[in-house]
Amino acid sequence: MKLVLKYGGTSISSAKDIQNMAKHIQSLSKQNQLVIVCSAISDTTDDLIEISQSIKNENKKKAKELAKKISNRHLQLAKQSIKDSPIRKKLLETFNQYFSELVALIDGMVLLGEVTPRSMDYLFSFGERLSIQLISAAIIDLGKKSTALTGKEAGIVTDSNFGESKPLMDTTKLRVSKTLDSLFSKRIIPVVGGFAGADQHGHVTTFGRGGSDYSATIIGSCIKADEIWLMSDVEGLMTADPKIVKNAKLLKEVSYIEAIEMAMFGAKQIHPRTFEPLLAKKIPMHIRSSFNVKNEGTLVTSSPSASVKNTVKCVSNVSHNGLIDIRGGSMVGNPGTAGKIFTTLANVGINVMMISQNPSESSITIVVKNADLDRAVNTLELELLGKIIKKLEVTTDMAIIALI
Ligand code: ASP
Ligand code: MG
Image: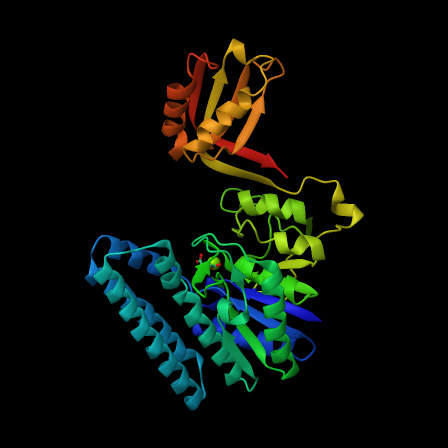
């Protein structure tokens, strides 16, 4: 079986977990062709984001301290996880090269006083550049052949929308399948960095927070994987957020559509685009815990079995929203009213999360994030009050409850 295994940051954050993971990979590799996709080690991406903020605030000292913290974390894990001394030595050398590069990058950004989306993506990609070296070394430490590849090196080509890029799938497919097939034929296990790729000019781009899930499904679709496993610190998708509902249960099987809804609202954060590459190829995905590999977790499939098809799977919620009830008699039977309201909000970059219109058409109710609420109300008042809108009624701090 061709398998893409994606590991989240918390699954690779201690030497013991890294060694267990390598053993699991070693045993799976006997019967399967594997591609490993890794996130950055826990907290690393957060630290890199804080570095960019420190640079913006001209706090070079803080930026350097954070770089040191990242460096110490990785050096310590390398020393604890890798038994073979030549492999460990090589890893430490690679790490030290990367840390010098990171420090040089910080100096450069401070000097220019410039934190652009492009330079940020390059900075943020360091987390995965480091983690893949460590994981690949841990696999080699067990006597297996492995190589570390960044998303760019694996062949993921994206548009130039830094911070929120999308893959150019035709080119990506050609490049990724070529790179990985050649490694498969040499029985080398590729460890690919999630989260990032590069645009057509070779500039590093990222998919946005949590983007490693998306990297895994992009790669899975390129190589026509039989299955994709998202390994993380949760057992799978649950019937509710276990932090809120104590007796929430694990779901054995859900459809893609249900999983997409749960990814948006649920306790397990999954990058919202993750399922896109799977839809056409209908590749099954398993969401599993790396700490409890005996448990099979949740299967996400295009064709759920009949017994689970017609049941409610999950109750989920999104808190901290504002509700705006927009009213006006002249909205009734007036084509384009909704269009005007949404265009007005879109023009100031406000995202509407939920919409309903009552049958008389005299009121449209929308939900936006609490943080956008004041701006949304101001904009609507300024642009449309007294015209198509007669009255706005606002309720703060609403939760959206969804039955999936
Ligand atoms: N390291 C990135 C993040 O923390 C991507 C990922 O973990 O999926 O957002
Ligand atoms: Mg993550």
